[in-house]
Structure formats: C-alpha cells, structure tokens
Length: 396
Image (cartoon, rainbow, N blue to C red):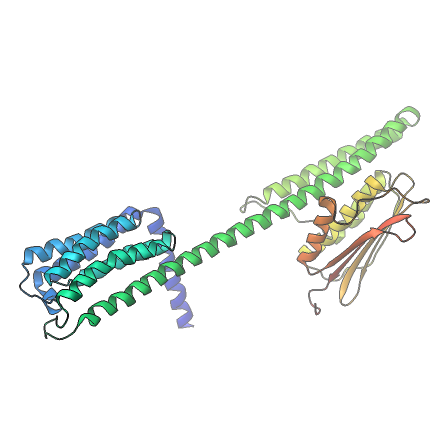
C-alpha cells in the first residue's frame, strides 16, 4: 500500500512538473540552465576539472569560458537543438585540444535528446558528426593518459561518450514514440466519438423525419374528408418534432463533459417507439418478452437497430406492408427480429452494405460482439433484420 501511495505521489508530482513546463517553458529552461551553470562554475573555479584533465596547466579563465560555452546554450536547446549542439561542439573541440577535457562536455547530450525527440531520425547522424571531431582531436592529442593518476586511454574517453549518445538518442526516440501513441489514441477516441454522434444523429433525424413524413401524408389525405384525423396527425407531428428536438439536444449536450445528460433510450422505450411508427401509418405487431439485466449501452444498441429497421420499413415497404417486431432473451443472447411483409413481391430494398443506416446498424452490433443479418425474404415479399447480441455474462 505504501509503495502504491508513493508511486501515485510521484506520478502527481511529475504531472505537475510537466504542466508547469508546458505553461512556462522559458522559466523551466532558465532554471535548468542556471543550475548547470552554477555546477560548471564551481567545478571550474574549485579546480575539480583537473581530476579528469590531460593537462592541468590550462588557464582557469579558459576553463571558465569553456564551461560557460558548454552550458549557457542549454537555454535554447528545445527550440534550436541542432544550432545549440553545433555551438557546444566548438567549445568541446577547444576543450579536447587544450587537454582540459571538461565534464561539462556531456551537456551536449541534452540537445541530442531533443534532436531525437523533435527531428527526423536522420538528424541524429548530423548530431553524431558534430560530436565526433572533439573526441577525435582529444584521442589523437592524448592517446595514452589523462586524469589525475596519469592513467587511461583514448578508449576510456570515447566509449563513455558513445554509450551516452546512444542512451540519449534512445531516450528521445522512446519519449517521442509514447507521445505519438498518446496523440493517436486521442485521435482514435475523437474519431470514435464523431462516428457515435453521426450514428445518433442519423438515427434520430432519419427516424423522426420518416415518421413526420408519414403523418403529413396521412393528414393531407384526411384533411378533405376527416378533419378530426387531420388534426390528430398534426398533433402527432408536433409531438414527434418535440421528441426529435429533445433527443438532438441530448446528443449535442454530450459534447460538453460537464453537461447533465438525460437517460439514453432503452428497451423500456420500445413500445413508445412502435406506437409512433403505427401513428405514422405502418401497421406493426410486437412481441417483446421481459428483459433481463442489460447494460445501458446494449439496450441503446437494440433500441437504435429496431428504430432504424422500422424507419427503413416505413420508407421502403410500401402502403400495404405489415411489420412484426420480436424481442427474445435466451441465456446466451438477446435476439431482435424485425420483419416487413407485403401481399405481393416488394420493390427492391437497399442491399446490405448500401447506405449509412445498415452500416450503422452493423457497427452498433459489432461494438457488443453482436451479429446483424439483414436481407430480403426468400419469396421476395419482404425484408428481415435479425440482431443477435451476446449476453455480457456469457461466453463470446
């Protein structure tokens, strides 16, 4: 428990540091540069640099100048990493040629990290080319000895730099890859949310407009002979329009994470949906068994697929069509079947795979490992849509 609490604290602390860095990058860069500048000056004026130098007689003023040249450019390392590395390489070249061999030369790894983080991979070759001359000059001038003991060799000078360069490059590439993965995850989530909203808008607008169209057609014919039925049709149009507006507002409010969302439609709303389709002029018989416990998302999937199937029947089945909706619940799955039939062979309906409606139904079913089968009846007198949605507490 203590380890978990400590890791959470560290994550929160790192998150705050990253947030501060994002909000005030200049302050962070100045702080880092100042910290390393103080360390370099302490090393230069205190004589600590002599423990790793090949020539301890290098003037102190030159050591101070070289240290400053190796750390002050760090302030611009994120904005211009290649230019910073080039400037630092000049100071590192003088350090190697003079025999000072300052440890501040390792500061070159900071711009190397940012090159790997923000530049194309080939830029690392240019960075390696900038680091090579100082190491070559130092190795040629002092091939057999450096440091306070007079021991060592060129390999002990070059190999640590090679390892450090490799680690800095790998760290930059790793952080870059993780950032790109996070960006891709955000983009995928945004695309999925756009698709979800598009499906909701299609289902809401398509269904309600189809119902309103049916009611308007019926009201137009009834206006001449049965004014009371025309008035009922107008009332139904007004009710359907208000429902459509309410659902659209709910979908649009979903774009605001702080908004209070109204409940999504579920299986309990199917009778009202069917009544609305009947009012629009499509005879519908229903057989809906008692529902087991289904998640809100699964219920919304069933509701939207039934809604889309009824909308298609209302638009394509013809005036003499009859539609049956059955909803059955087995231990392993929930099955919804919507069948539209006509007395004579119906006009060709959209084939499976055409239009946004069928594609949207398939996508909704796939989200819950369901299967959707739709197509004409064998005798050509109708169309059937069958959804099988596995129970979440049963094996897939």
